[in-house]
Length: 401
Image (cartoon, rainbow, N blue to C red; front, side):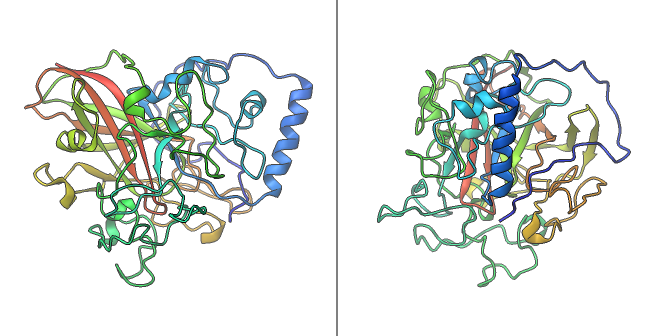
């Protein structure tokens, strides 16, 4: 397990700068005693070797899953798991004593996502009818990070076997004994089940002692279905059919894989059937954006899935940020898309690679089909992981004109 959590977020490569907006200071203050207690928690964290669950946050359009961003302790853009009030309110702590917050960056604007990154599905293998929430049928804990087994015995074979599109263990023969990711969601995009197409609070019906710490609020509690409990959250975003638009997301902890955006009419049931029919083709560009406003256009790796017949060849995109950690001797799983220098004596995350690349956001171009009828829609975001049996899902309100 990787015990390093030190981040070096300085931009070291000559990229293309964009106009920077003034940073908004965080609200509130921390007393000296608070600082001491935070330091004590950090010491415990460094001393404990713990696994890290992946988390993603849809940044734009802001999703319904960010419903808690007006509540303490998230109000004003607070998201740091080392921030004392967040830990003080944590209901389920990791072995290190910490709560994992939705750390993210949104260029030079506040990252006001609340608990967005804690809406997902846990324990989901390709070909299974349901996810298992990390609980074995016999009632024992059945970890899914990492996942190396067919969790339900479906026997389904992976469809994504080209190393060019794989994000872990790319050098081994597909479906061989050494191919340990073959049962995980990204190996057959869209073929793994989910609890809910807008995510489940905390990832499973009950908390299972993982790094996850969804904090129950008046808006939602552990195990709630996003499509059922999350209210409409107007974003003011209007997209015109037949045009190319942009969406943005970020990764808190990296598990490779790939993702998709999709549309479902707001008046219909928000399930996989509806979203699958509304899969959105990607545009040509993928852009990385760092916390100082710097942006860089990079290669897009787009692929199709047999699960999505008739929707074209460009509705799934590979996660462009390669994973690396101490277990891989800090060697990224594939070439990073930017020029970076990582000092393994200090951290496991570079400018555009690593285990926790939260200091860079991913901007995607989406080609809204000209045939899309005008009206109110829900934009779905689905990230199928490859290292783990996990799927992140979020939903945002948009208008198509």
